[in-house]
Length: 188
Length: 168
Image (cartoon, rainbow over all chains, first blue to last red; front, side):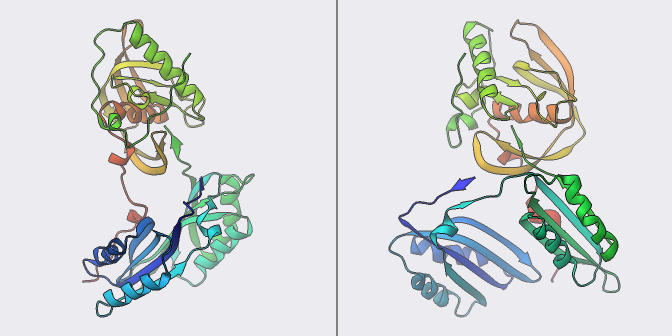
């Protein structure tokens, strides 16, 4: 998909994170709403005991990053949330999503250092583009288990079987289970 | 031959419960052919329901025979008038997209085995069993006849993969 936003809009990436409680999304979106910002894209989730929000917001030009920073600083002065704002350049706003087969890769096994690094390095070196990634430490204190689940777009010419094959050696080396399956959406 | 343009949300017809076809007349036959032409014109399309081309009647067409998920298990081109699901069983999750909801996809749980009854364009009532991807496609198209989009049936958020720890 090609997306090119309207040129009259200023775009910002807003990250908000803080100890989880009810009302974080409401408090954050209230600031944006009152400033007249649009939330164009967002992903918010609990990570550990924190609640994390990442949003792409827009506002009609002229609009400065300073304004967002000031409002968030005031709102978050005593509520435990931190906000970080970044101005997006044109080439970050007009983007092209990778095209190709979408696959879901799940990796799990006894916790050890390097699971995320080794898996994602292998994928990156083959031009596999990660679209979404979640990790979680589960199991018990005595037997911690690491779970990594990601969705990635395969480059042209790399099949699911080949993608699975190139992770095989990591399976042995890291003593983890790895499964790769196709989840390319069906158009109905 | 008439390829119609696909109606996209928020057109209210996509949320309407469609009326049953009372008589299979010339207009209904034309509607069915328009649905077939529109389906064949959409790249990779495996089905179109009447409300997607702006007609609030219970009719849809499906053909999964050229799709990689359906090529080994299908009934070819199905022209269905007043389709009803008589029985359903099994369940599977697929990531679905819809021509009426561009640029968005979601995981939807559907029955894997169906027994269906519908009227053919020649007026004959047919009952048959469908399974696998064909069954998924049939349920997706039949949902349109009840004003339901896949967005009404998304089964989980991606982050729902993990059972949340309690921090209490």
